Length: 64
Image (cartoon, rainbow, N blue to C red; front, side, top):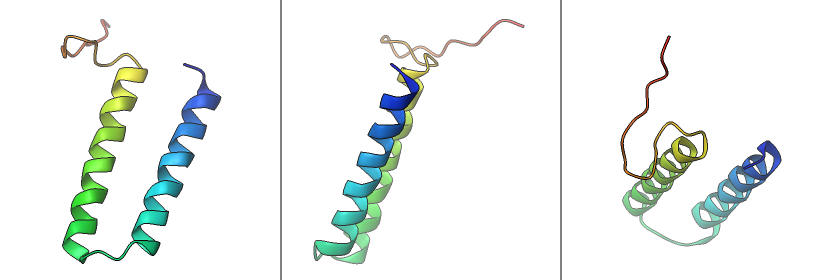
């Protein structure tokens, strides 16, 4: 995955989350839960994209 596609994806996710937060009427608690879930999903996706997590869910630690 290229760095440009990674940045574009993060920008799109951020804009969509901003739109939902500003224009969809929801309770504040539900918005917080939604934000936390999206952030956790994006962090896990980034860990897969950079190869920190592999498909089996094991964490690879680089050798020094």
